[in-house]
Amino acid sequence: MPDNYGKLAYVLLTISTTHRPATDLGFLLHKHPDKVQEFSQSFGTAQVFYPEAGDERCTAALLLDVDPVRLVRSRGASSPDFSLGQYVNDRPYAASSLLASAMAEVFRTARAGRCAARPELPEQAIPLEISLPALPCRGGGVELAHRLFEPLGWQVEAAAVPLDDGFPEWGNSRYVGLTLRGEVRLADALNHLYVLLPVLDDAKHYWVASDEVDKLIRAGEGWLAAHPDRGLITRRYLNRRTALTRAALARLAEVGDDLEDALEPPIEEETAEATTEALAEAMPDGEAAEGLAKEPGGEPTGEPDRPTPLNVLRREAVLAALDEVGARTVIDLGCGSGQLVNALLANKTFTKIAGVDVSAHALTLAARKLKLDRMSDARRARLDLFQGSLTYGDSRFAGYDAAVLMEVVEHLDPPRLPALERVVFGGAKPAHVIVTTPNAEYNVRYETLTGMRHPDHRFEWTRAEFRHWATAVAARYGYQVDYRPVGDDDPELGPPTQMAIFTAGGGDV
Ligand code: SAH
Image 1: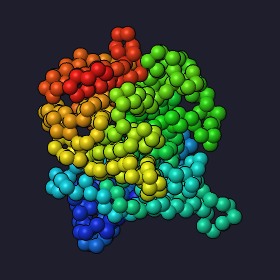
Image 2: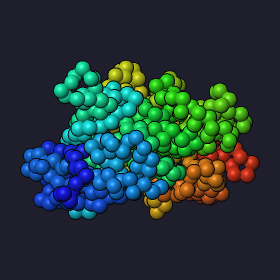
Image 3: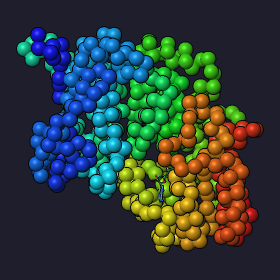
Image 4: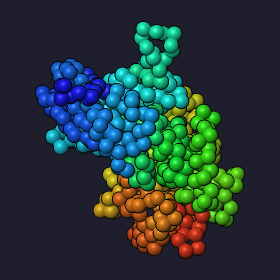
């Protein structure tokens, strides 16, 4: 009997680029194009090899050699296919969660966007073509594949795989042959797949522990919060565990994007099983709103069982503060995907609006969300969206009544803060500066939170620390400062978000 009896090897994923030189793909993936490399997995072996590696086009293939015996034996709580059940049969050839977990390990450094040999490479969007010949797409098929990948900038070619080529009358299987094409950073592409493959597969493969929320937030950084299907993605990724899903959506709101509609499961997802599970999980803790804030008065806004997400309260609080100080021209410093800019544009009181961010990716998202290409001339004339860094003096930051730093300061390394203070308070010198930042004291209210609210936060301040910083800045640059709570103002912990309103020359706020 051959010793590979019972083992099956399938190419599950190819990644090609026409970036020049195309062999840079080897640097990016940290896998040399000349070698076949093997990586031992709990369920068998993963192999990476390059079917082509020329200057003009280079392709890396990931192949899984699944050992059914090891697969079954490896069913520990930490194994990716914890409850295989009926799915065991398709695991070897389907681009399932096994592929996602193999990818996570084999391309760990590439997924983190690091490349020691060529540090500038991972930052570039490069032409990519990714093929997955057998992708299970439960509950949505080809259409779901389009829905999930297109908003991320991919051109999607998806075709249902027939059950049996010889018998077309049998219809299609639930597999889709998928090709994605686009100009995307490789790290982003790998993170899209890492999250979306198990979402499409939607089988209960792995034991979802609360650190899955962290993994999801980390892998989804820069794209998940703004994805129109972030609700579906989050629910499915977390195996419809309602408490975890709510925690993750609240954290995504922290990252700074709308999620009003994300909590409402689409009809397609309302299976009996999901509903029962959702009820069972939502009931015991009552405070299903883990991390979702209520209004300062304590009463949730909107429907009683749907508290207003914190990012919405934050945006409203900033708009109210701008109204209070009578600002008509506003610059949003660190505008991210542009949710505040969008709200400012909707209000004609604001005659001149600018959005600035250091991240080109954030600006692309903002342009897409603001529908910049279809915006009316009148609206477009009120808006300026540009790339810039808040730690370097820039004359474009000056000339506005108010500057907003909404959830931005905590993204800077503390030694860089004095530079931001100089640039904003000393250089641009608007009459008003509005700063919001998380209140670290409130973090104990987020049940599943282990570290800070977002992986990119460099610090989170207590109320005392924030006031200490704000008072010193105000004194140094000749401002007066006033504070407002944002969200449920807990008598002991304070509110989830803290806000400072600075006014030049000590005007009365
Ligand atoms: N204000 C937005 C986004 C907050 S996330 C909101 O509340 O929705 C923080 C943003 O600050 C990110 O988009 C990040 O790219 C940006 N940022 C971080 N450091 C920056 C810097 N030095 N200069 C400009 N933008 C910066």
